[in-house]
Image 1 (cartoon, one colour):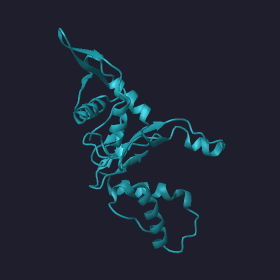
Image 2: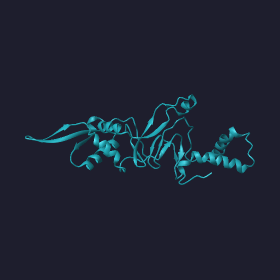
Image 3: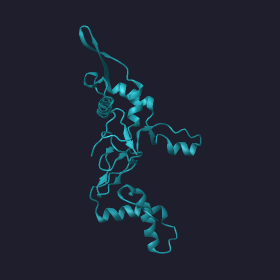
Image 4: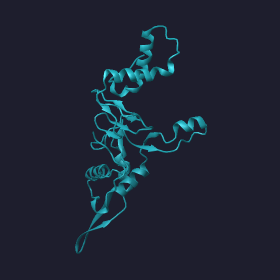
Length: 221
């Protein structure tokens, strides 16, 4: 499992030094490395776009909607000005000049074209792939439990817990399963299921939503 810890801050001396030259591809490769090495503001790739994950207060005016959406993580396309800001914060940029006394290097701001070119690449070898956000523990396709907060390289999921969840055993016993099923069905004790098969189908529907990320392929009714 790989995690991105937003608390780290690279010191200026540890920042990657990028020298602007004629080879834009090399500069962009260095820019990607600088962004990946700076864990403060992770950048992911999703589809053919670079994205970021934001946690901000909901803008809904409806109180009911706002209470349920407050601080929910949101995936959005990385804006070009923000990418340029991150490039500036994650690396030291230089331009070489030849003078009568030799070659000198001077600090320069990030040229705007590099943010645009980076976003336009379409494929990136270094940014982690983001398949989705899990706000509760879930299962991986191999049956293992994903419960640790952070980015999970095995699934591409970013686990951002939205509530305190009781600890889930790594290897639950049949008794654990029976107790969990009883708790799950408790609010529906008086629902008039026609047969046990109907009750089982209902439980299956609930569990499918919870374990969706562990299922490769469609999940029909």
